[in-house]
Image 1 (spheres, rainbow, N blue to C red):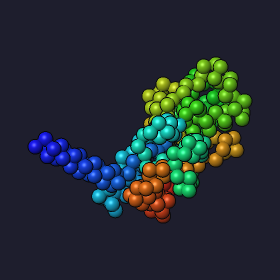
Image 2 (image 1 turned 30 degrees about the horizontal axis):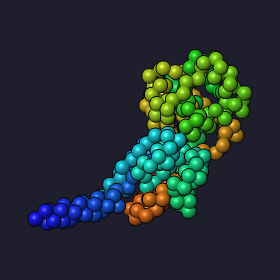
Image 3 (image 1 turned 180 degrees about the horizontal axis):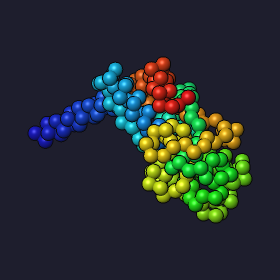
Image 4 (image 1 turned 120 degrees about the horizontal axis):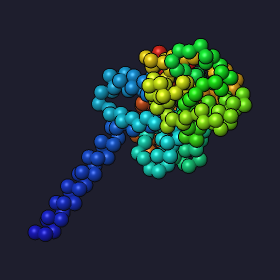
Amino acid sequence: MQRLHIRYLLTMLLLLLTSTAGATQSTIRLSAAASLTPVIHQLIDHYQTIHPEQTITVNLASSGSLAKQIVAGAPTDLYISANPKWMAYLDEQGSIDHATITPLTRNSLVCAGYPTPAISNLESLTAVNKIALGNPKSTPVGDYAQKALAAKHLYQPLLTSGQLIFAKDVRQAVVYAEQQFVDAIFVYATDAAASQKIEILFTVPAELYPAIVYPMALTVSGSENRQAQQFYLFLSSTAGQQIFSQCGFK
């Protein structure tokens, strides 16, 4: 009798594990840079009208935070970074399928905030009180902003004077500007355009920072998930790229 009970428990456990494995394969786990928030939701909505049977869970945060989560074992099928740096980091760690790394879309860097004639270029920022940017150590947008300011020999003076405030990602920087905690922020053009309260004060000259490219790749486990492979192909398709374009990406 006891053997039958143990056999029953083992059978139920096997069925549960089989069911869980199947559910995993029908779920796409996406980790994407926070600056992609509006367009990612549009892409998912469009994709699920074609594939309503598929579930997509999305983790939106700074590229660096997401990359570290993946290395630590966070379940992820597809990763989209806001710069090549963190993609290279994951590649070095052996966390992604190298053959699937591909550029997905592009963006540009702007200074945004409430309209004011006092802020018209990088040099004019020395006269304002507070400026927010993503932390350069973990956010690509902060890294781009740091490089642009450093090219004009402004980053260290602004940092030393206490005028710079570091946000965890672009979404937090936008909130700071919308609530007028700061006078200006460095974000992507698409982030500024998506806000109803702030506007672009000036576009940062492109020659002052590296080209803003968003690479994507399947993780090692994602490369074995057929649904993740399909979504990966959709993002690069004409339909997917049209949605990026409509949201202001290049």
